Image 1 (spheres, helix red, strand yellow):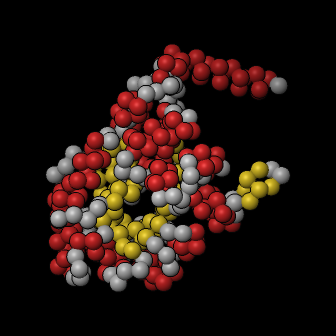
Image 2 (image 1 turned 60 degrees about the vertical axis):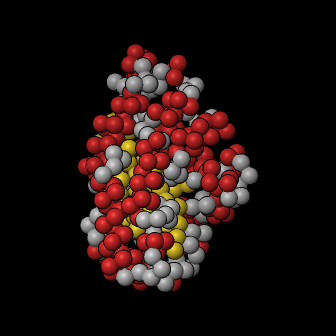
Image 3 (image 1 turned 135 degrees about the vertical axis):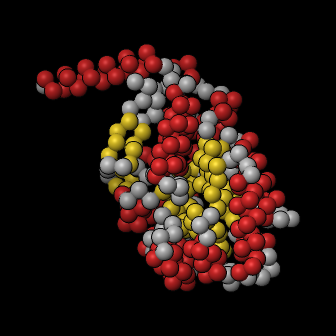
Length: 322
């Protein structure tokens, strides 16, 4: 077998295909060809919503992104929000998405200090074309009622803020969190190693997906280098991690050059992102099994995989004999 699949109830867990030795040291060209998943592609304000959405989709397509969730803040395109302007923004966005090759969803987004948070959240609740909501910034507690309404209406939401705001969002039922490097402030060093604190243990143990953007953290001066970024530590400690930058090919190259990330690590990040998207379980599973896995299988070696499986079976038999 080129990969192992373990089915638990309706959820699937996927082991990375055993990569052929000659593909272990992959090139930027191979990284560019890999199917990718982006959970936080910002729609940058432009002349119109449709033009801005098309621009970000074009960038994602050039990075071979097969599924994306676009953060659209309607306030970026209107001085004052009304039902008419919200409806127009959503109509333009959905039309642009339906006319593009990239499989994308809309995540309506609001800045926490804006005057229109409740209105944008209501639009996320009312419109079937919206997959979820994102609240960005500080003082998340001030919007507890908005987050409760989203949860009551089964609309998933992301919290993107500082450590205290992540805590408020998790308590309010956030499905995903977008964190900065300060997440490690909750960690402590013990004789047994690095231990997450109460909040971060909750995030890890309940598989709340953690979105990170290492290259952007460096660009914004939040961390000096990838060697100092918490992403590898979070993965080592068992957090569910996804990398959410639009320029994902370059991010893969950076992680490869600075941290030695390879195809196994990128497979893990891609599957984690897909499994924690706001799409349906059936759609997530379909893309993993028909697009992501086959792409990595092409870089695997069936004979190498069979040999590895035989060695594992032999080791298991020896362990039973003991």
